Image: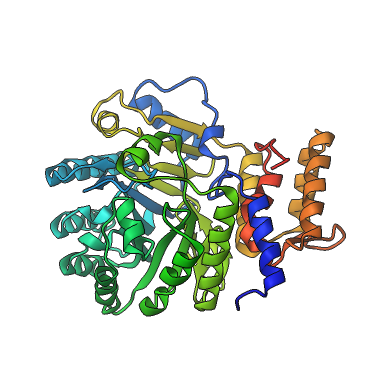
Length: 457
C-alpha cells in the first residue's frame, strides 16, 4: 500500500538523511580494500601456484557459478559507469570469445572436476553478440562439462537488439532469466541520456520472451536521471503494470568520477540534489509497492520473493555456489580464501590471456575474519537479522577499538529510535531489520563494516 502522508514524510526525510555512497555488500571486502599479497606472481606458473596454494584442489566444492563479461555496446548511454567498449564493429566479438574460452581452460585445467551451477552474462550488452556467437559460447561450456545442463542461467539484454533467434538460442541452452536494461519508460528522459528506446519496442521484446516455456524477467530502473520529476516517475513507472515482469532492480544514478566528462558532453546532465533524490526514490518505491512488488532490499523488488535468498555479485539468487569464476575484461572472481580481478582495459585483458606473463590486475587473499563478515552481511541482507553468535563475533572484533564501537552502537541506537531496526541484546536475534529498514540495509551494513570508519554517515 502507498504510505499515508505522515509516514511518507518521515520515510522521505530518512532517505535524504541516509543518502551516502556505500558499497552494495555483494562481496567483502570491497575491491578498494583488497590488499596485495607478497611476493607478487610474475608469470602464469606463479599465478597457478598462488591459486593452488590458496584453494587446494577445490574437491569440497563440486560446483561454481560463472560470470562472463561482454563489454561491447553499440552506443554510449551517458548514465553508465560500467566497464564497456563502445563500438559497432561486430568483428571484435569472436576474438574476444576465444580469449574467454582460453581463460576458462586455464582454470579448468587446474580443477577438471568442477561443474557449473549457474551462469550469468553481464555487460556491456551481452546481446551485442549474434545468435551464432551466443551458440558458440554456450555450446563451448556445455561440451566442457560433457553435456550437463546448468541449473540457472541469466543474460542482461538491451531490448533494442534482442532478435527472436537470440531468444531461441538462450532457451536452448537453459538461459531463461532475462535482466532487461530499461532505466525509465519516459522517452524524452531516455533520449537525453542517449538511449532511444520506445516503450512499444520494450513491450514487444518482453512478449517474445514470455512465449518461452519457462522465463523469469527482471528490469532495471534508475531514479535521479536528468529530467525525472516526481510527476514523471509517477506516470512513467506505472507502465510496469502493462509488462507483468517478475522483478525490478531500482538503482540511484551513480556519479562515478570517470564518467562525468561524457555525461556533460552528450546530454543535459544536471544532478539531482539529496532532497530531490529522496523524493524520486520514495515515489519510485511507492509506485512499485502499489504495483504488487515486495521490497527485498538493496533496491530489489519481487512480485513473489523466493523463500530462500542468497546474495551474490549480480544481486540476489535462490541458487548459489560458494565460488564465482569471472571471465572477461574486468571480471571479478570470488573463491573461499582468494579473490581477483581481470585487467580492466580490453587490450590489457587480451595480453593477460595471450601472454605467458599476463596477470590479473589485482588479487586478494581473504582472511577468516573477512569471510565471517561477508557471511554476516549476506545473512543480514537476505534474512534481515543477525544471530547472537554473529553479534558476539562483531562485538569482540570491534572492542579492540572501544571508541569506534561506541560510535557505531550510538548510530544503531539512533536507527532503532527511527523505527528502522530492533535491538535486543538478550535475544537470539540481537539485531532485526524492520519493514521500513529494508530501504536502509546499506547503511546498517556500513555501521558494521570494519573498513568503514565514516560512522557519522
